[in-house]
Amino acid sequence: MVRAGFRDGEEFRHLTYIAALMRCFPGRNRQNTGDLRPPPAGIANCAHWLDSELRLLRPQMLILVGQLAIARFLGPGSLEERVGQSFGQRPVMIPLPHPSGQNRWLNLPANRDRLSAALALIGEMRSNFVRRRTEK
Image 1 (cartoon, helix red, strand yellow):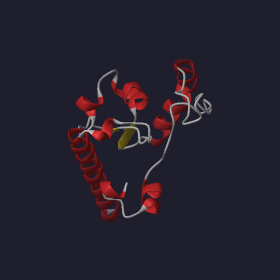
Image 2 (cartoon, one colour):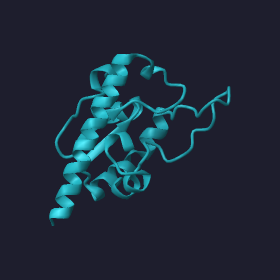
Image 3 (tube, helix red, strand yellow):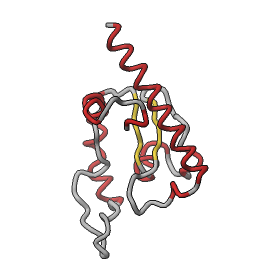
């Protein structure tokens, strides 16, 4: 997240709360090259936990990482239509592609440009958040 303007990993962890759509580990895939995709039933079973966390935290921004998170909050749609854009106001939602090494989405230069635009949006939000905190 340094590309998004965070000083380092420590600042990122200090300013963010990381949550998952599903609390249980779905297991490894058959090839043992990555994790299984969380099943819809598992995501649905855990939805109340995530919804409760968001009500308590009242975040200013949600960084939606991967299609599952993006679809959960924005509904179905392509990464090309969403990465590099922001949605909503409180919280502002900024979609990112999943960082998995198996994800080939970033192989296209246009998609790398979309990612850069999304990281710039996150950086803007971070700067505004830090500025407001120091003004208090």
